[in-house]
Image (cartoon, rainbow, N blue to C red):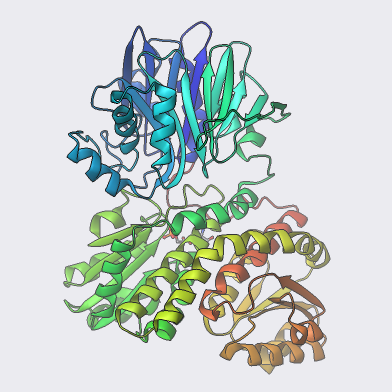
Length: 607
Ligand code: M6R
């Protein structure tokens, strides 16, 4: 996730507005930033690594001349945070500049094609193919608008783009699966990833839709479908938001916004270059001993992955809480060991300590992280960026499901590479994986209202038990952690609800069961739910919407609309959604602030 902005003013200087917008967009990414302006037939670019204030102190971003400007705050996805990789990116002539948010899946192939035609690349980003592609079409005689239309037809993936040209009195922007909204001001036209970027100047907005291309001039805008070139109507509307509300896109808390962002962040994980995941799969498969090390939520993702790797690839990859690793497993580590470290921030001290110990003893280090340029990416032999964008709510939500998705892909690849999956079974798993973002979206829609009513009903409950067996033991652990972190509710997570637990928790407790449609855990979960009901506990069961057996034992059935034949190893993805929502709404019902838990802070500075 990055922040992009552009403005075309009737009068005055664009650069100070671009700078101010970058400050307001910094919560979308802050490892580097930059600006480009157009003045008297030239493009001016300033960009560098660091937060906006630091870069401005060095480069004086507000001094660039001209009434047209674009800007970018970066959260690196392709290419580490460096000055060359910072946006905007330019073509060979330096007359086209582009800022981008999203992921261009086919950039490697386009880059090779453009290099073969003589284009020279200055960065390692996916974005840089865009100015070169536009340049290519312009050299064939097309104007900026038509060349952009042709260029974006060649792109696969997600992209919100703002584009300026030295000889064009305006700017061009394009939207496909990444957010982009226009602002209609009295003093000019604006475009940004999010409304707060231009809210001080206008509250009249035009949300663009996927497939739209807009041309902004000082006194108006036109929108086209870039596939057909035909004009489309997008009506302006007025929003009544404060800057704070706008940053949260109208949600009351970042946590709720991030829960709702999951379909989008999951789609990003499915765009990963599988070559790196395949390398990881091979290094895990051939290891003598293989471990996953992580903390907190990331550890729970490893627990789920360990089940998936064992079940699909028949390979034991042991999940270990990072702080436990060195003392207990450190002696077993050597040159034939592979360690997969999973860390959203890539900077968690215990995870890094485990990794460093293993590296010193000659182990192969792999990493999954959300922060390119983090320490983990510097020590790992192979790493993969989980593509979630910054997570501002302290309680991890979208980064957890992104880790689950990346790790599930890894488990399937491991199984394929070890020859443990038939062609049909592998196809089926990939098909279900690709459908996960839609399933998660449907689950959110189907369950949120019910969860709100459950949160009201149980907000005063003293104790909770989360029960999930097999791969969904991870779901129970993570559901419990969320409730504990933000609602401070004493709770346990267990694969089996034995008599001692039932007796200790007593009738004043709520037991929440995760009940998949198939798998070894189903029977035990259902029988434990019956036991809990008999003892007088309130029983909530998360199950498939047509699960009659589950409905029979439940006081409350949270009905999830996933395909009943979804392989059990993938079910932690839909099942965690209602539990994230439950923790959030219980916290709110208890009058707490879910974005600011008392005892937690993220490892990385967040805006
Ligand atoms: O950045 P990491 O993934 O290494 O962080 C690990 C934990 O500190 C983290 O998952 C923490 O438990 C979350 N905030 C939980 O919501």
